[in-house]
Picture 1 (tube, one colour):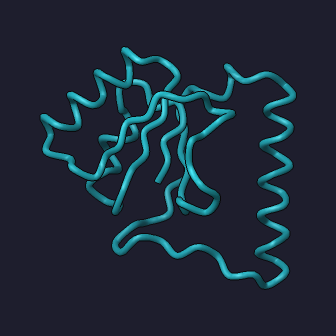
Picture 2: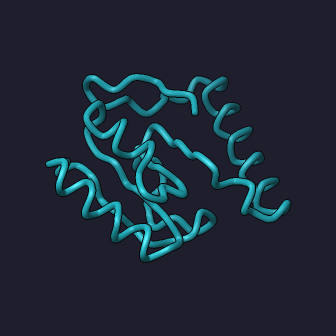
Length: 113
């Protein structure tokens, strides 16, 4: 799972116990550090906190099968929002063409944020 614009971890901390791994990505180093402390104090060893932008995620393609975000996309430029929409459309087209979908981690549920 990837939490884009994770901030202090509202979604990360709630969903981490239900998924195999979480990449919590935020542009602000202070937010990332705070979330790292919160995750560690909660005993969540599956949370990796990363400082990066929402438009340049440091992850390889298909490394996650769930992406969530809360209060992040209004910070993106219109061009970045359009590029994201095109990627989602291409992904949907690939699924319709019969290409296999990535498998969810054991016990993970589909979450719509």
